[in-house]
Length: 158
Length: 284
Image 1 (cartoon, helix red, strand yellow):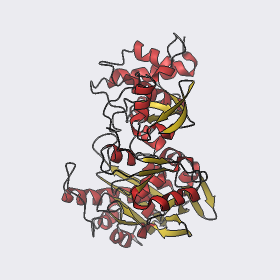
Image 2 (spheres, each protein chain N blue to C red; image 1 turned 90 degrees about the horizontal axis):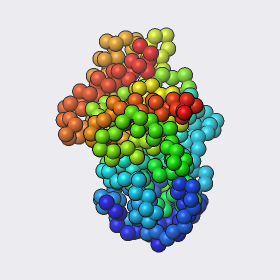
Image 3 (tube, each protein chain N blue to C red; image 1 turned 60 degrees about the vertical axis):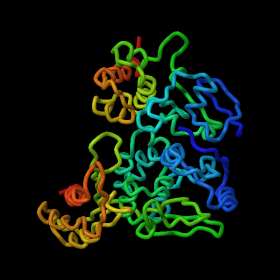
Image 4 (cartoon, rainbow over the protein chains, first blue to last red; image 1 turned 120 degrees about the vertical axis):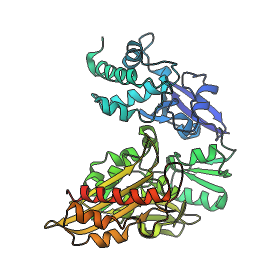
């Protein structure tokens, strides 16, 4: 067992974990943060995307021990109380989901993308979401939502 | 999928990392960003008894200029390299290639050192590293040594990094002013290159003064297309002249056949992509 201290969604946790524990397992099984889902479990689909120190990463391709001393934000840490994050609001508004399984990862990647590029073109959104797969192929509304969310994040939000 | 159990060591200096390596020998695996190693561990293609994490080692991360060389620390991420003005200025082809590695999430985590130590011949680092004439700085208990890119890749997933050694940085002679291009052929998003070509070209008076070409996924290691380099020297920058020289791109290669294409198909791709890369690099 290795002792780690990680800040997840603003709360500091200290836990003993087996070194082989994946970050996504730690988040779901230990902390109960089941908003972050396991999709392909091979680093391809991006459903498990979270932010590590503010940048998007795939939590099935990280060991929990590698995040010792760092800060993780999951989909559960985006909203401000009952007020959704503008990107969450935009996904709801544009109906940017069908089955919804890829949605947590899509939103986390979308927030990262817009943080780096506040006004992405449609092509830039599609390229920026390269690592996130929607098996319902609902990309059209997802891309619309990311652009709407980008507008809201840069100050146009209500 | 969960890796087999292992002991985790998180050194905070290169010396500590080397000591941990010496202690565990063959049974240890070094983890950098882990974007190649974790899939391997999860699928249990490898089950090391010790994993040594370089994530806490100071001084292995960063991009700087030392004399006429660009120096990139082994733990520098793909994202940092792809977005570095220094890399863009001195080694543009590396920035181009690295911005096409996998996807954004992987680029935030994966590192130049990890990718070069893993040495997948379909990886995007090998070809630009060869075309740029880079050197790998390898550190062991006796100090550091430098290995030229041409001597670094020894076989499939094998490199000049010996037992008990670490790849600590990459030195790239500045290519400021030279033209360059990375042409990567894939069919779907975030795919490994079916074939890719890195080219750096210096043009003088409308003629190619010097060209260096690296090939991705055309054999068990990244390869130089020396026949093309030779054929390009002194040729005018015209589509016909470049295509003729590029027809030698598959010489001495041994590309794989798989679901994405036969070896023959890859040989053809290499000639087409080489011509495109050279023309783009030469501004033709």
